Image: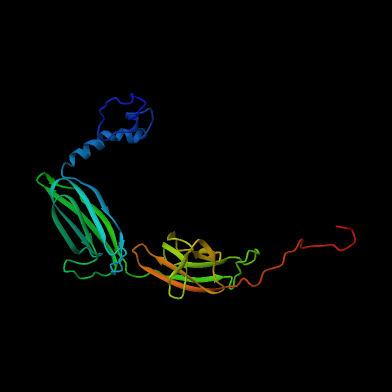
Length: 279
């Protein structure tokens, strides 16, 4: 496609494992690493067939609680040639709790936190290992770590200040601040909801949060037919929702009073000197 040592479009043969300096005028990947590439090629070549490629685990943490959110994880990989493959999942004691086997080159299976008998397994960290064997030999294993987590996250120190607030444009208490502390990192969103829990406005969408104090401001408006409109005066409900890495959710509600009746007067200046000087 493009190079400095060779003209664009010229066909050039390189080793499968090469350095950038083979095609361009650059030191990449550095003298010490480049000197090791011949031996790297030999070691890789000796590994032979079959090989496992494209190994993926869609969700490293799952919550198989049937809420429709990360109830299972997908495990997939490709074998370089026709092979017998197996996926083993072990608990913290090293015992195999789930074994999935098959034949072929393309593998896609799933795990929903149950053992070979279909029994739900306890929360904890599990190890996964994928293997493949063909007439040519045994592939190098692919491994991953999986976590079962069905415990909802916590939301601590949730509050709304000031209360009441007056979103009337006078520059004083025009916005309410929702503050909360997630018990762990994950995603969170803040909404204004009615008495039935229906969203009147998503103040924020789902966004990444850490286990530190979070602050979100609300300007006293909700969604209307033609855009954002002023929320009615009186008590409003703000909903904080939290979702952890495994998909478990938690929520808290806090109320705040919207009051636009008091609007501060304007002052031309805040300090005067009535001494007859004209200033």
